[in-house]
Length: 475
Ligand SMILES: [Zn+2]
Image 1: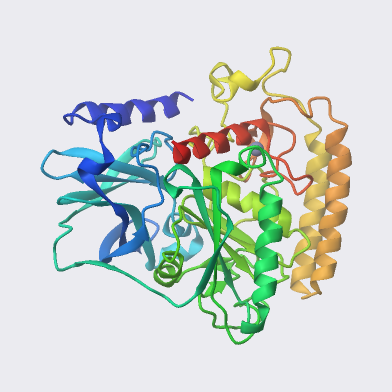
Image 2 (image 1 turned 90 degrees about the vertical axis):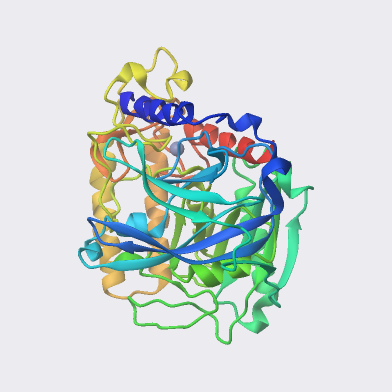
């Protein structure tokens, strides 16, 4: 917790050294046009180093973000970008984010160089400005790693809006995008004949999202729009079982050699398509039954729409994208390194618990709940270990998806019964085992949708983290 505080102090100091840096004082109309500027760049490097190179700067459609919440005070994300007015030297807009590069850098693939296409989006500045990108240092404070000067009237900045011929429509329209959270739903691997299926999948999975708190009680704070990008044949790329495909958004299973990790690396195309409608958050439905998905903070989340657990994948991955929630599970294998238990993680829902008195969700803990909080970890771990072995065998044998779904079903039943019986279930505490660490990392409740597939519910700490983000977009 002390590290987390240091981060906050660092940010506020950097504000003090620049004149007039109080974001509340910035009037949108004094600095911005009501359209979105998108800076595309290549993020290149290996496990040791990273560099940025501008690709292009374009008009990305209507500005859907807040007109008043211009500074990001949430302290979330591995990266952080700032738009600094050049003449006045003040930060006029900022946002935290995460990236595919940031995850990839912690995988074994990063012994060699790799390059990834990324974008930052912000309201269109009226005057020349500096785009600055910071990254978490080893103590989790943000340190500037790149900056680039941009003149919005330069020949390198294209002010024309892209008009693509894809069909788009509103699933939920609750009013002015400036004071709503705006979600865009894309689909990949849907054939021309499957328009009705895409529509139905989008409606079904949105219903799942809004059946979970706090989304349920705040549904009126959201707009949801969808865009249809069909292809010839149903399905997307699945390299592990040797099923190759080319689709409009190039979504693929097998990211970082994890067969269930679904990402889209063609960021330029995905962003161009999404720009048809006003949006801040993006969900990409994959027309597949094979279990899979992904979610990266402030980028997008993906979900295999036909899987029996699509409802869970949808909500879990959106939690990553929307509120930077960490995985609370620790038994499934992932390609990237687990966070260090030596440093307090910046994510709101896991803690290294260096000082129980400074627990970051202490306000939600009842005095009678011990910290750390006991739970039947041994039984749970023994069972989970067995499931992992069976899961790997099913994939190795290339068994039909029904077999995997049946395994997950039995896992859900056992875990639900086990967790329901535990003394501190339903209470907020600090339960050991979280963030890919079996020991030394703690989660807020015995169960949460960021931990198991048991029930469609976030723990109270995750709910609070999500509510805070909704607040950033509705004021
Ligand atoms: Zn949680």
